Image 1 (cartoon, rainbow, N blue to C red):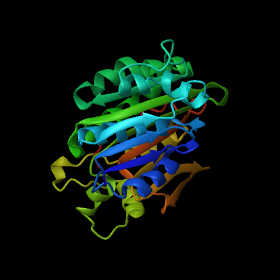
Image 2: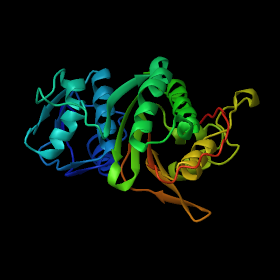
Image 3: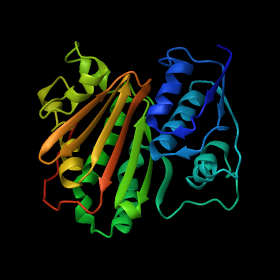
Image 4: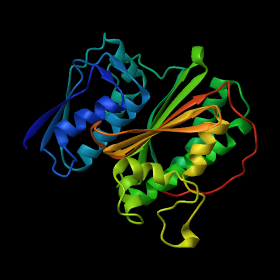
Length: 295
């Protein structure tokens, strides 16, 4: 392939972008020489889309692909949202509108290296979460541990030692949405090093089972991604969606029961995308303690 067009869908969210990725790049095993990212039809953009588009751009450029842009109409609301998120500042070196700035309801797009992640979580993300929710830092103690360990895992599973993240607060809904993504080998491949017979959806589900770890030595095994799921669902009143490869799983609670919704045929997610949906009016202050986890 010499040059291809990646058309950002009208409704830009993780699933629609995964479909476009599959159609344009397959599994990214063979990359074109040039890519045009076309925003002409974009009308609505969710936090996971901001993160995914940013990660995809970084990935293509780091692999020698020439990336260009079109359809950047500053009058469209979705483009203004991306501009305020600092998406274009990060990738074009300047904002489309000089007056664009992060909104109080968002934590701007940032590419965080593992070496800087713990400081960023402590000094940026958690204070912002406190400000949005009106809750003390104790409410997010376990979530802070979860985020730190996610960046540890990015360091373990991607050659670039970096992940992208973006967050948005919906004050009228008492809801926070946070997306974090990397371009590592992905959860299914890690799980299949231990249990080879899983498809991508069942591998993701297996990674979140209590006591499971893809680490081969007992001394390397932490509490597992089960702790992340438990923390978000039980203590933060939220849901969790995990996409990797051709699989996607959404974890939520219905009463006291755990719900697992498995999706396939939704395209392709390079690396791993984790979407947190947190209810700030349902946070439980129970002290779970501090643990380590691995995938």
